[in-house]
Length: 349
Image (cartoon, rainbow, N blue to C red; front, side):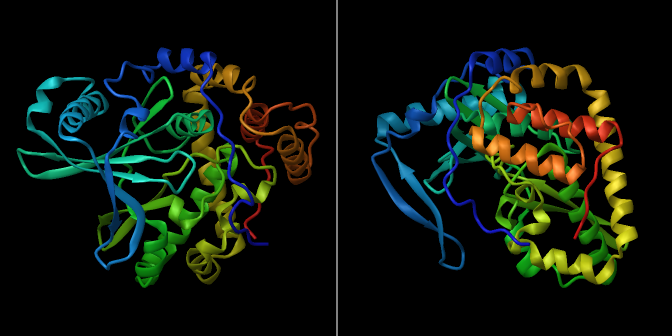
């Protein structure tokens, strides 16, 4: 079975006070000098094209002179909070090079391109509408994946660091013609990525919703697949939506796995990743408990999707453990508990 896009646009869920309390405890909720709505007050916009002249679906926005100065100062302050815990000395060397806006996607993000005047190096960060689903997804990424990331929340505004890497769709189009050894490593990493997504129920990992980070190594390369879109954290109702292996956009990497790996090899990599995730759960158990105390009571999907997903997962795992789950948070927690009990069943078909 292969999946396409979700049939309908995902609903938006505001960040409630209980989640804000959790975020404040762990230094995610801070005072920001600018809110998302301030960036909407641009006076002009032009389409942004890539180096090949293709429309990127982003547009570069402009502000009146007085407004621009105010916004640029605030954005440099946010970058200082994101990178140096608010050390304003770094602001002296920063310049806002461009502000891009994307209406494609749930969070309608602004992407800020910022340049360090000391070395002309550039970086990006994002200002988005604060959606509870995305915040839970970001937090679970921090706690359960091998990746650390920085994000900040204030009111209805979410600020995220840029996650560097080659976009998955471009990687599949241009970087799969590697040595057999590297192809095996790519396929292995995809198995592990697939496992991480399904354990914590992060959905919609089509190729353009993840990036591939390549690290040169002795005689070969190391690969790390990283999610960059967390809007579909435990929202949809069918289990396959949480398995990247079922999206046809990812077929290029899937084909490498079929070519180079047998069932036993796949199972070995799955078990390795489950063990790593279980270790991360145990090392962050108190923080995870506080997170699920909030998430289990929060509404981040519709009732029909909750009923559908608990039924699908119950059949998949051959357990009644999901029968009494009343929220997506409880479903995610139950999935993780099955992992810890070593009763987590998953196949790579």
